[in-house]
Image (cartoon, rainbow over all chains, first blue to last red; front, side, top):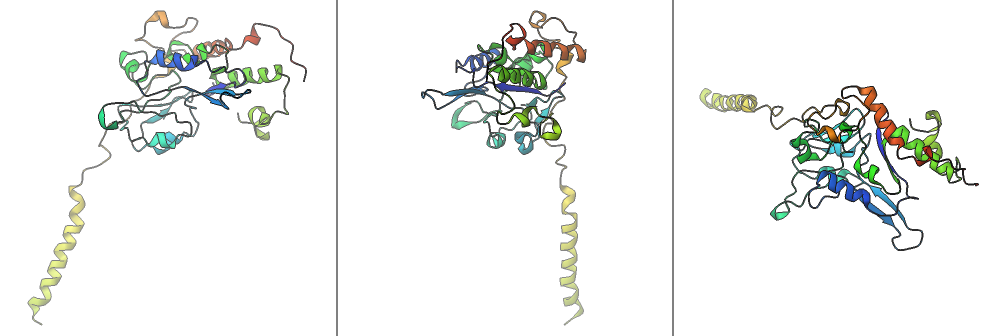
Length: 201
Length: 91
């Protein structure tokens, strides 16, 4: 199985924030943390584009690289998760992440950080799958229930695709072709070309 | 200089050297300090603690292949072109 990935189709995203709401509700995300956010470029200007952003579950995750207590791990499906019991709340992963995925809840006085929280691809955490402890710390484990992330499944326009990287890439490629574009589109070779020609497997 | 004057600084040096050499004996191993991240179970193992009503049908918990098939099939649910026929837009 390929790595689990998200793709957000900026042509379809209408900034409804359904994905943000679905995530917040599904996992009862603490105050001050927005695991998923919708970013709009040229907001208010005709031709504005919106894109839904959360943890990218990087292959070479900078958060994992910088963590001083090594609380991060990657599952077989490529989902980057962490153990909150090991996390010391230093915030280094938050500095390292270019997408702003690791966040800290507004917790207590003096700006105490608390434990890092981020998108889990609805794969929970190291606690027992589906247990109350897992839900309280990391939210629902939808992957263990045979489902896809709540954000992608709730997307009103199916702009946000989530799941097996090969499948979502295929779906997105067919959309690009349906729109009358093809290999002349910037980045096509890198995304869909053969590995020898620069395409990534 | 007397013999005693010679031996005193060298004895002191010896004591200091010994103290330096033995300084690490009192240190505790840092490898055992702090919690270690727990091992996680695979998603395909299922969610035994979750309510069965919320588990998607059509796959077997513990069977990796059936779980992968279920995930891939569900991902195609995001592709409306699998359900409708449309002609590609002319370039």
